[in-house]
Amino acid sequence: MALHIPEAVIYARFNDSDASGYISSISYFSYMEEARTKFFDSLQSYIDEEVVSFIVASAHCEYERCERVKEHLSVTTTITQVGNKSFHLAHTISNTQSGVVIARGKAVIVCFNFQNQQTVLIPDSLRAYLENTR
Image (cartoon, rainbow, N blue to C red; front, side, top):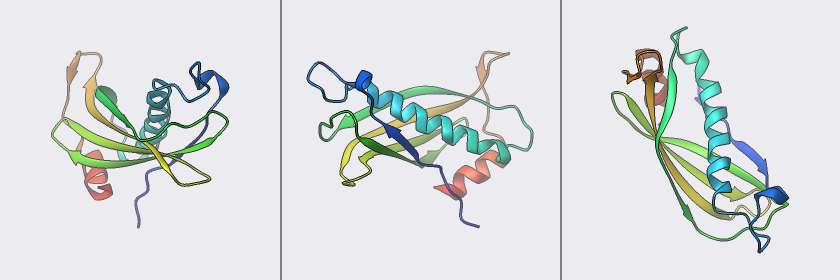
């Protein structure tokens, strides 16, 4: 069975723009967050009823070109590394019509127990999924 990370399709709205009418640099972080949220939702069936919370330890974005608002964008997500308590994601943001990549991002995601306020090991069932999806 092929494992799949859901793609996020986003419409760049007027309020995502800066004064010049181009998508604001901060908006790309929101687009990556939307993609991560879809990804986290897709993980629930691989957790075997374990309660796992995720926090973003770091996020980074490199801008390759400017894009105007009123465009449809695609955010693809891939798993690039799996550690003991964390995993790394790479995001590629492109224009859905032209296919041109406009930004690339990275995020480090940590498994976290909010009740104890500490990091926890990635559950075995989730680790198996993450390692098979890389």
